[in-house]
Length: 254
Image (cartoon, rainbow, N blue to C red):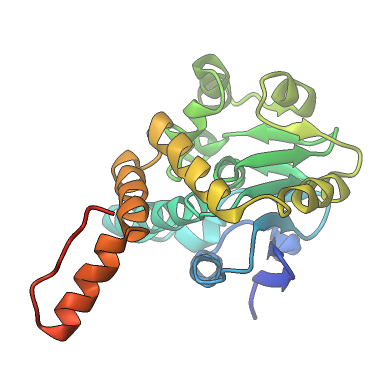
């Protein structure tokens, strides 16, 4: 039974974690379902904003289900769990449309790393953030010691990862990591509805520029920008046509 759902309502899509009995902790199957949701969104031209939500109000996501990785060998853990999860989270972070994480419950470990993949976060006032991996003998593996450092100051990340202390919603808002709301989902929906009236191509290019500037897969973002520029030229159309017609292209520089 699926524990990650994708629903699309007009221009707004919603990814929902649905494993509340385990505080929405990720299993291997959930990672693959998230990957499939991203694949669908990448080829959904009508979607202009994505919300990332979770069932239940106890936890947005408590991280990774220990039962899913606890018996893996070190090699399996590195290859099948850490690298695969990182690849899928990266895919989510690099969606071309704006994304909003809706935190109505706590976000720990992989849950915080998931929230960090979004372009914007909206938190309930009682929500806390944490990186408790050291308490079970591991380290953050899906962006907690990399992507998160672009969003929060180094001492704050160290406080969570090394000392196990949580960050409150108020502190997260003060640091610019999230917006706090008594009604996170309603607030996120209002933001999304405001965003979908803007140009989707402008959003896509702006996101690429920002990601290139901060180092979020800089090489791919620069090449995507370049590809988009030349892809809109007459020369590109002439090149394709000449290839199909088996003749020399007549490039005009336009």
